[in-house]
Amino acid sequence: MAEKLRDQILKDSVWRTLLLAIIVLVAGQWVLVWQYQRLESRRIEGLEQRVEQQQQAMEERAARETLWAFLEARVTGDESKAARYVTEETMLQLTQGLFVLGGVEKYEVQERENLGEGTFRFRVEIVRERLAQIEIIEVRKIGENYYVNSVQLAG
Image (cartoon, rainbow, N blue to C red; front, side, top):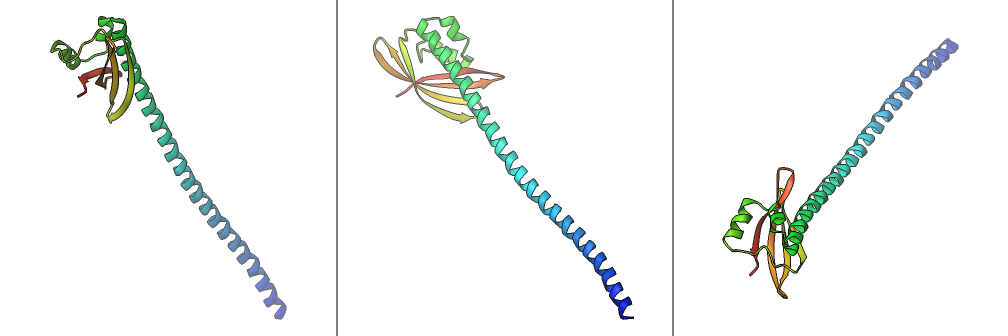
């Protein structure tokens, strides 16, 4: 009888041990899956932030290129080329005499500010007849391209 009892305990012990091992294995896999998902979500968040930063840098670069093309056209005196980079609002400002398109000898972009939603404001020092003047130039994205939306003299 004692031998039967010992065999029964050993028999149950093997099954219990096997069942316990399976439970530990499943619990370990759940923990690993949870940790993987947590790490992966952090990685995805980091990637999304980097993509957003790169997108913003590309947008700023495109706005700067439009500004530089506009300013270079002003330096060379090519008013028709400069007109390609402006909106109707800027042309209205030009016709009202709020700023002068030609006569620019050189320029220096001093500051830039991202106003959000595809709009940048640049502070540009314009030298005309050896006199420096500050212009605040707003560049706005319309469709897929950037255009000079406003030119205002500072002060």
